[in-house]
Amino acid sequence: MYKVLIVDDERIILEGIAGLMEWEKYGTKLVGTARNGLEALEFIQANRPDIVISDIRMPGMDGLKLAERTREQYPSIAFIMLSGFGEFDYARQAMQFGVKHYLLKPCNENTIGEALSEVVGQLDEHLRKEKFLANLQMELQQVLPSAKEQFLKELVTNKMYGRGDWDRYKELFGIEVEHAEARLLLLQLEGQFEFEHLFALKNIAEELIGCDQLVLSTTIGNQALLLVRNTHPEEKLLAILREARNTFKGYYRLDTTIAVSDPGPLTDARRMYLDTLKCMSFRFYLGEGSIITVGDTRDDGGVEAGHGGAGDRSAEPAPGAEGRFLYDDARLCLYAKSGHLEAVMQELGEVFKALEEQRHDDVSAKSYIIPIYVALIRQADPSSMNDYLKELGKLESIATMQGLKSFVEEKARLICQTNYENQKRRHSTIIAQIHDIVGAHIANPDLSLQWVASEILYMNADYLGKLFRKETGEKFSNHVMKVRMDRAVELIGGGGDVKVFELAEQLGFGDNPQYFSQVFKKYTGVSPTEYKRLP
Picture 1 (spheres, one colour):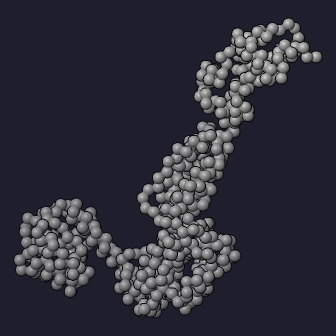
Picture 2 (cartoon, one colour; picture 1 turned 45 degrees about the horizontal axis):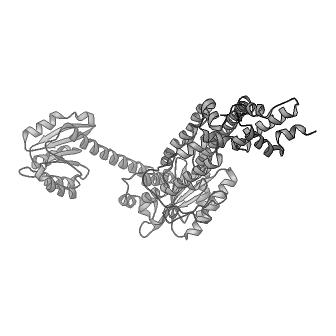
Picture 3 (cartoon, helix red, strand yellow; picture 1 turned 135 degrees about the vertical axis):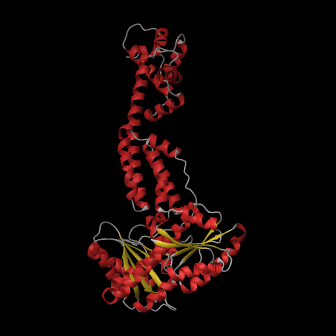
């Protein structure tokens, strides 16, 4: 429990705060109260509280003077200042005495509790750092290698670390900080691996870089971090990293993606680490096995020749973009539903090209692809839609944009193929129906595309006409005329005394035998009467 002292010259406020708070809830306990700064300073000297909650304006010694005197003697004691509305700007002067928290009176339990939680968190962090340093100093000779690794890990992941920590550690580790420029290298294993693989990768990289260039190294998760002196030109450093990657892959058949920070002072190691994490996020676009520099992530940067992973991938520069990715999937759905694979692939190509140009992070990119994927699978055959929905979970584990594109294109290809076959069967059924209708209604003078579409098939006549022509290669009207003429030839050739006007009625020409004769002659080259006389 952290000990708390309350200081205020107003008894009501003093007792109100003391009785209002559930101190144990915040990991604290109230150890005393004081009515002014002089009384508080005596209490501090005698009892050494961890936190002081003090009014800023008090007789005798005010809160600012109390904070100043306390900081001189006990710099670890944290202050929370209480001030009236008109005193708030004045309270900012307390910053030079290490005061970071101010509360505007009157305060409620939640406001004070939030301030206490923040201060307790900072005190916990300070104690943790102090404990870590004390333990480090006690066993330094035995644990120096692991201590250096832990220091680098803390340095790059803990935003509380800074120049002061370098000053404390440089003598322990023999690191020259002044005028030293460095780069941070982040090496990430791809695929399934054991810890010894990461250890081997770090050792290979350290050996090729050289102990004289290596400042610190460590591992975090599936990544190895190397802080190296910036003495090599960038191209030489990249060549060394390619050799390390290829050497490791030759032994273990595992790929490695490497991120390289810009050069900077050793004390900027955390900033360099954040830069390499940003670089690593571009692995989604540049592919596993790449070597990615900060320049590759800028708007005017592309992956330089030779930076790529297996096969030394490269990519064109793409402009950055902010905001949401918008896409109207209406055309994609229409093409997929009709089984038009080429058009679907073109649409998906444009979608992924736009995403690659905007360079969203992988989580955002996947969030934009998921609704497109769902819209796409809704065009699938209902019997297989659940199977496609189950595949949705695989999107989360896909590590690169190319892998995401391949996954979606594969499903689109299957959906289009199925829909194309279904459409083809459906079209064949419709065409067969039309043939049957024409045969059954050949004597009907009203037999036409419009009549068949509206009276029998209940379809759009334009669509039906285009479908018929696509499937048979001829217009519907030409097909009907051909069927009628073939039937006329069959009837005339069958012998018997068949009258022209009877043929006209039987074949849909109604009471217009003259028109029937004209069409027959055009089709066969002779009139119906002449055709009867042919041997």
